[in-house]
Image (cartoon, rainbow, N blue to C red; front, side, top):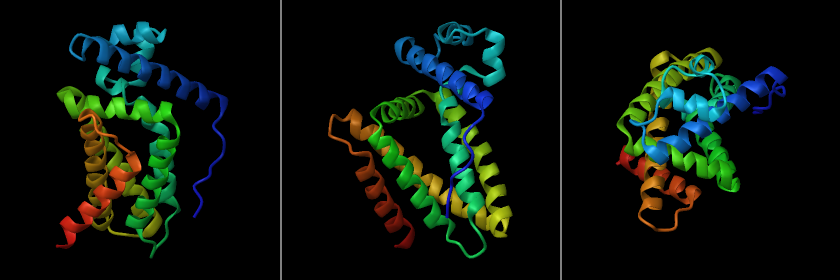
Length: 204
């Protein structure tokens, strides 16, 4: 199963670059002065864009910090779209997230950003609410993709996706808590531990 796709166009690369700049500006401001004290205008100014351009990319200031996750979602939809009837969707999700987390682990910059965003999600209620809303929207797209590629019923597709999403959330939350406790935290070890804990929870 291959998830390779055509290189992004110049327009797409520019869009992603702007998203990355908005997300970085929002993350810095949220950490420095708090979400409540930060406005969309502040983020736009820090990113070097107009407020009007800011709202073309995201509806709220909280959403701004998550703009950098779009490429990961595109890759996941490509994985789901490549499945066929009879393929194990849960195993495909395990491989995808294992590969994704390994890339984050190898890239200190991307891994650090991912951790910073997840810390905000865990500690800032409005960012958590936005994350949950975006997750619900993404789940709907994932379900539609999996139904189309495999012929599963929407219920079966949603069950597999929601179950795995819960395990990924557990992994990321445990990773943040481990880091904040001051203990060494290897993301892949946390992922493996959470996979074992999740299997035990659902099979016993």
